[in-house]
Image (cartoon, rainbow, N blue to C red):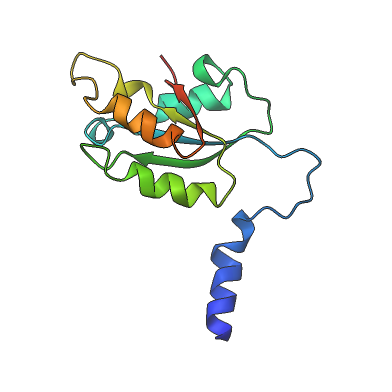
Length: 132
């Protein structure tokens, strides 16, 4: 039992809110396309967030990205489970990555509206896009 407690302290406890802040930061997750993730490491999404550009302009410097994951492939099979998990960590808003709507080398996500509605049904705000 001691090993489990030590493991939790070392691996998970740091991510929990200790209540020491006056104002809760906005906690953000980004969902991206599984197919596009094979060629895109997400640099533009993080750069837009780090510099508070494009879709991340409204956030103050205390905002945090607490999740960054792919949809899990069509039809977005991973999104619901991961949003439920992130809600336990104070998730406020999910950005649906720009790659989910772009057309060109990849088709736009055929399940975009369903994914959006699923997240919104959990009481989480959804923002279209990250860096485009």
